[in-house]
Image 1 (cartoon, rainbow, N blue to C red):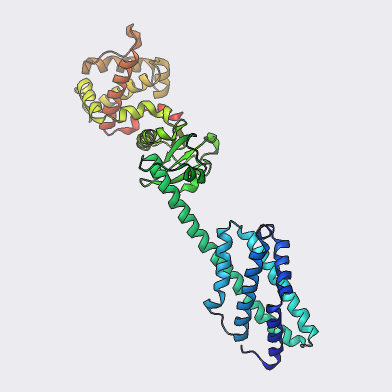
Image 2 (cartoon, rainbow, N blue to C red; image 1 turned 180 degrees about the horizontal axis):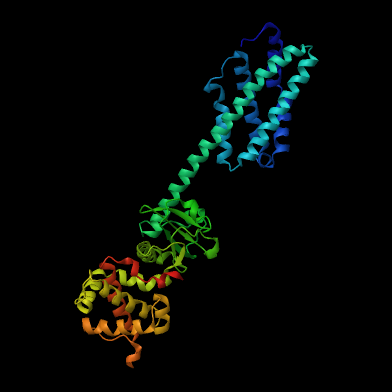
Length: 392
């Protein structure tokens, strides 16, 4: 569409508006009135943007063709600036829409006052609305592009800081860098690691998170209630400690996370609750030697041998309680008695039946439990592994 002779009067009117400081002030006031977020910015900042957008709008309107990207560079920049200033997109659009509406109202008032016919006003206002709609879209595009860039920059900065803290990389972060992310050198924080790749799934944990060694990890001043956490995401959290302790604690959390993954755990878990299994999993060769020494006479392919081991494991998991073991395995207590008697007869390992008159010591229990679990896992019959320890 080209500017018609009748529309040229309206173009002159718009030129006057663009150069009128009172009009600029009125549009700024409209934006600040309808958007508390914009009102927090210095008035001069808003005035500068309005002046530039009016001038760019006039240039686009005079051509009356398809607007080029060049016409909307200032609109895109406005959106990017507001994203960097922390203005919410809803607040930004409220301000833009208020200024746009007021500008159109003033243009109509002045056009009628200048005697421009209504059909010309309608024609030109439709074209002007086309431009202002495109302007708003570019403001939004600029905002979201900057928002993505800022998020990426913040994520990368957090990740760099966390690598230095969790991996003990040098140099140590200065106090001002820690403060930027809400940390204090004398503070105490929980080290948190997870098997998820999307940090949004850890939104219940209020702290600093990043991607460290291809997994999400972070530091938080306090842990959320278990009910608030994502039940499908495996998370391991350590007790609160100083930043100086973080590298060693992080390694322990990783070990516990690997243990949890192997056991099929989900949801939040405390590092200390996984301490026993994690410590044992750190010595796989010792586990194999122990299992071979105590249970070498058993054949993994023999179903009866697997039943003996799974029964003994369930028995130890339940505090050497015959009745609890029978109930868990859905068998008669006499069946449990028989299996517990046959296992030492075949293997030569010490009796674990409390009915024999002597209970195992704590260390004897751990040694036998470890051997039984290792053998059963090696046999490939993981369906018989009793993971009662992981249900807490």
